[in-house]
Amino acid sequence: MLLPDIDAELTVWDDDRAPWSEELLPVAELAYWLTHWPQSPKAGERDLALDSISADPG
Image (cartoon, rainbow, N blue to C red; front, side, top):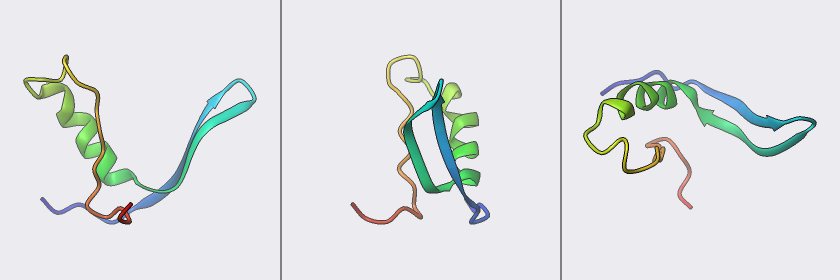
């Protein structure tokens, strides 16, 4: 699988508070997994976990 290396800032907002933010999120990879995860046989049993191949270790 080849995906473009596109990183962007993603922030989750709850009213005026940002409980989660990621500065360099691999959005192309996230989009790929968000479209394929619901089709997996265990999608209803487990949450989506993005284990990016471009993420820094740790």
